[in-house]
Amino acid sequence: MMRVCGALVMFLLLCGSAPAQSHCAKLAIPPDAPKRTVTGRVIDDLSGRPIVGAVVTLSGFCNVVNGGQRETEEPVNERTLTADDGGFAFENITLPAVMLNVSKDGYQDVWPFRRTAEDPIGNYPLDAVTGPITIRLAPVASISGVVRGEDGTPMPHAWVTLWCFQPWSGWRTLQYCNSLKTASDGSYGFGPLQPGRYFLVAQAWLAKHEAPKGTLDYVPVRYPLRTGNAAPLLELREGEQAHVDFALHREKLHHITGTVTSREQWPHLVDVVDEDRSKAYAAPIANQCCKFEAWVPNGHFRLEAQFTSSDGEFIGSTPLEVAGADVSGLVFHLTSATGIEIPIEITGAVKPFWFLQMVTQRPGGYVEAGPQSTQSGWMRDTTAPRKESVSVRPGSYELAVLATGNVYAQSVSSGGTDLLREPLMVNAGDRPDPIHVVMAEGAIVAGVTRRGGNPARAFVHAIPEHPDGRLFQPMLSDENGKFRLEGLAPETYWLFASEIELPLDLRNRGETDFWKQRAQRVTLAPGKTTTLDLRVLSAR
Image (cartoon, rainbow, N blue to C red; front, top):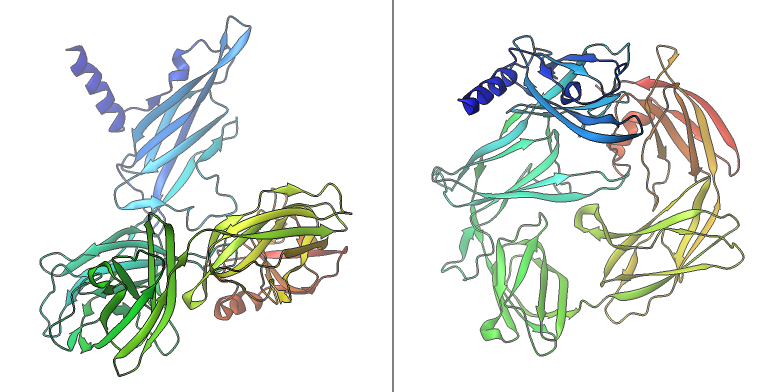
């Protein structure tokens, strides 16, 4: 009977028939500790309508006085459901601050993809003037559709892969999101998804090993379709239920043959990767020997392999172009994946706290952070270089340098290569020249962000005229709208303030030109401070 009553009490609390009670009310807290009621509403971010039946969780820690001598912390975790008007309430809260998390099927938090300057990200301080709290949830987005063959018949057991575009501190990155097999009716579905930019690739199979019996076979299809060298992305809006159908078609395949060069062992197969990162084709190695073959349509590809044997780890990557004919006599080189050590020397007339990040170049103008970075370091003596090193595999790299204070990387070079504007090429067996980083005094931009003429919090963005190896992240002004950007290279920038944090792709002219037209253009000088008043721009 007691279990039934306890369950009934919990049921009533979750159903919103009574305000949730904080455990703090039951603990030995000081008698003069204020007790407050935390109230609010949960609404749909798009429509503004109340969300009924959302689970609201309040959490935090109670500071409890034990014998008047010391304090301990006791966790608090309470839940309730929103009522018909989206409202919720928690009574007898003695915490100075609480965390509020809300969940509801078909909805997600807004701040991970559209953080506002005033967004507390679930953390709410409580005081005598704390009023009702409004929490917005975004309806989730999704992508679904059907994969069909040439005759229009749904294709079961086909594969659809989703790729996500993710700007990273001004750089272009592309991440693998998920792959799904189509159902018996050829259908597929990705969700829940955040609003953003995506592309999909549908293919009849992944890494088919055996050669087809004929010269025609299904080839992967990308959405959105490529137009020349352009690879457009699908812009998925908040709450959008996008529908993308695929019609796969057959193309003539060409016979590709070659040999693998390595030590005494070879991989079981070589992947043939197309421009959209599809692995619809594979080149198996004959009888564990050194010969491979594949059947591939016209296009641009890469032969790729990575495997581990008793001799160590080996990798390989080489371009392949198929243009209306078979290709024979290919030689695919595998090299040891043992890291290649690159010395790094940092000098300068200032003493920064700095950090250097290696950035791997990927096809299509994308990059990937890694494979290694330096340790964060402090230059205590500027008369002698600080020495570090990184270990990388063969490949093409860019470098990003971060520093604290009014300091920037004036130059980053290796031999005769300017690594702020050119990639660092590392080949197997290389002994790379040291990377030289010269730190110098930067420029400063300070000022106030204003909304309606009044100081207000906002995100401050700086778009450089020449994006290079530096990382650019927006800065949040304080409660009085004040901001201070340090360590800027002495060149031309466009500065603006926005009500939300914008993950800008600084290498996309179509994207940056929109904001440049609304921004303030300034040319900075080292050691100088430029003062600006920035009007907060709406991103909608």
